Length: 332
Image 1 (cartoon, rainbow, N blue to C red):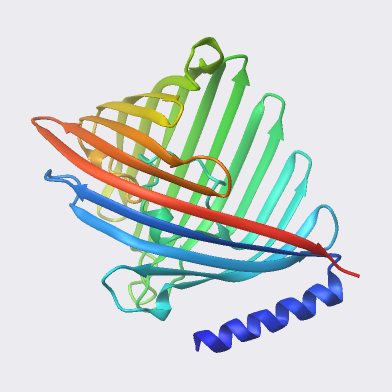
Image 2 (image 1 turned 30 degrees about the vertical axis):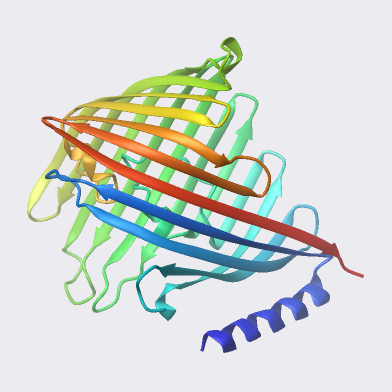
């Protein structure tokens, strides 16, 4: 089945590119990850996530602003059997014209979104490599605004209806900046359960900070602080519940070494697709990072993370490597 799909995709790509496109384009890549989470707390479960993804896509440009792409992304988790369910289609339209950018379809999320972990946990990069919906970005001299809709599950008699709506705003003023992130997760019952079983869940972060990279000997130095808020309601079972807290971040890098540290204080944030560590009223995460590869087409990093919780310290280790290549060819 997989072989037939790839043959059909290649045939359609070649036919459409020569029939309609002025420039054939292609992309391919590899994403390998080892993520070992030694958690022993009441908030997040311990787990080891090991696997690799490979993707390939081709398409064509109609003109300098519009292009189409199609391909596949495949995940293989080490120790498991190959599974056709891990094949994800890539099929999208992309428009880029100066300050305006649009994606529509199923397209890779990497490098498009900047949603913090408290709102959207990082396992989405492993198991949901694509956004299936719409992405918009507007850029200006003062900053940018992005928004996306990711339809994560279509309702059937057995499957829930779920989707994510999220926005990110950033405003720059000299070395200072402010960011606003909002995410809403819609979780409805199955078709068999009816429309009454709906959970409303979401949150936001509001930060102000400074990028001090140009004022130190470091390659990068930034600090920010602000608020985290969330809401949660199970319709018919309990009314809206709110949680609020503060979050401070610092990041510094010198050559290939980096340190990223975050401190959260406040009420537990019960976000369905967020990092469960933020259920703790006090949480500090400090990442020690070494960039094994930081230039060119290959990027790889080793991270050793400490997770400080009340009366508890947990650890995690992560190694990731990412390869991304692309090309194009003018058509007669």
